[in-house]
Length: 112
Image (cartoon, rainbow, N blue to C red; front, side):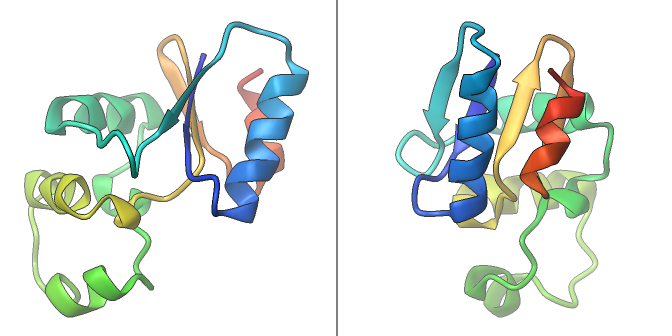
């Protein structure tokens, strides 16, 4: 199991606590320190089974200044998140071929 985590985010910290309770092998990926690739993010979105735009934090300054009100393709949205990782909603927990966004953090239990 892997969690894409931002330790400065309270929801992400709550999500990490839930995952640790499960007592499974866990990889913690601080994606702001170790950015994701286009391929990796594309795979995560496939596992989440959502459009890329649903993974974007639309209130972030980078989104508002660079992308808001633009008609972006799925690929362009993914590239925006890779270029500006703060745009990625968090936490994301991946287990096998499934993933969930931990908003609210309790949603992570659906994956466990």
